[in-house]
Amino acid sequence: MTEKQTWSQRFESALHPAIARFNASINFDIELIEYDLTGSQAHAKMLAHTGIISSAEGEKLVTALEQIRQEYRQGKFTPGIDAEDVHFAVEKRLTEIIGDIGKKIHTARSRNDQVGTDTRLYLRDQIQQIRQQLRQFQTVLLDLAEANVETLIPGYTHLQRAQPISLAHHLLAYWQMAQRDWERLADVNKRVNISPLGCGALAGTTFPIDREYTAKLLEFDHIYANSLDGVSDRDFAIEFLSAASIIMVHLSRLSEEVILWASEEFRFITLKDSCATGSSIMPQKKNPDVPELVRGKTGRVFGHLQAMLVIMKGLPLAYNKDLQEDKEGIFDSVNTIKNCLEAMTILFQEGLEFRPQRLAVAVTEDFSNATDVADYLAAKGVPFREAYNLVGKIVKTSISSGKLLKDLTLEEWQTLHPAIEADIYEAITPKQVVAARNSHGGTGFNQIRQAILAAKKELSMI
Ligand code: ARG
Image 1 (cartoon, rainbow, N blue to C red):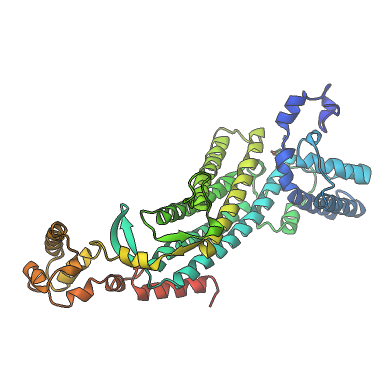
Image 2 (image 1 turned 90 degrees about the vertical axis):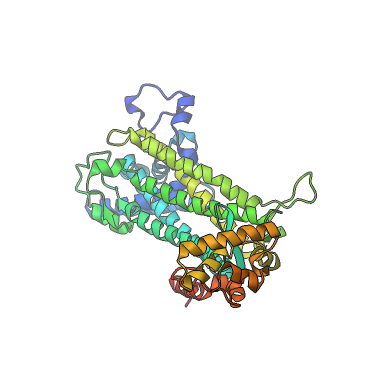
């Protein structure tokens, strides 16, 4: 290092170059620059408003900060390692532009409350963007559900065919997960949107600042009540990473299903060329790279949550440099979530096609209507457990004679139980099996239509 650092008057010599690199965060916290500028503008206005600096000085600071914003957007402001972090970089440039007045920006402020302010402003913005993306994803799922109310697909438990369901029901389950994600992020935002600005290094400040004033300018809902807590709290980051991890759980589960559905074993969907890739050696292959990547990227978001929890667990009050480690995980999680949501939205909008004929066969070639025979008998007064055992018996004999339930003769049915009549055949068709599950939240077509209406209302589509 040729230059000494901003804090260097107390220091006799400059940092070892490797230590300067080790200490610096400018390479990644430059991501916060727009928020840093906005935060500093609010701070400058407050300093002028309270008379800590003159209003002319306040205006000069605000204008120069705006100039830095323009320089940054035009690619003309590219601070290097010397600056240490984005906060020092901006302060340095400010002083280059307006001289000594620039040095006043840090009155009654510390980088500790400053970085906390920036990170919260960044996250608040990103949360809004992610919530919008969740809405788009939900819209695509809903459109697909609406087009497939009467498309049947095997429903599974233990990955064994259990009961046929409406494909729309399956898709709407993911719609619900996305709905919770959307709500959860709004809730996380309540803890993100609290201002630490004015907490100073840790103990507040001797200047007559007005914290409510900056909070209002920056559209924070509240201010931190305790300055030690304000500069060292990262609960909001843990909460965000937790909500981000849950979003990834949902996307990863859906990805896993798409991967299974696209396999030769299932053949429920075809991947379109726009969203599938080939193999470098096997010319016949079409690979589900998109959902595989989403499933794979889930790991890094979980990792960032774990890292943040570990960063915090041993920290004495108040600020410790460990906290600089919060940023890369947050940035990477935000980018990962946004990329995955975009890719999955495109995949479901235009990247895959369900195969109705294949699905129709899949719901008729097994015993997933066995529960319905038991229900049929139970509705005629046979105690359910007794009905269940009877049907178990007929499934067993049918398997050994290579028949499905629909192929049994009426005599065979009546040997099983005399209460069975010719309407049994209708009762066990896949369509009737699905339609009959009309309990609240079930897969019955009437339920699905109501669920679609409710979802449309939620998305303000009607
Ligand atoms: N770059 C630092 C961070 O990200 C800014 C705060 C530095 N504060 C300090 N007391 N060294 O946390």
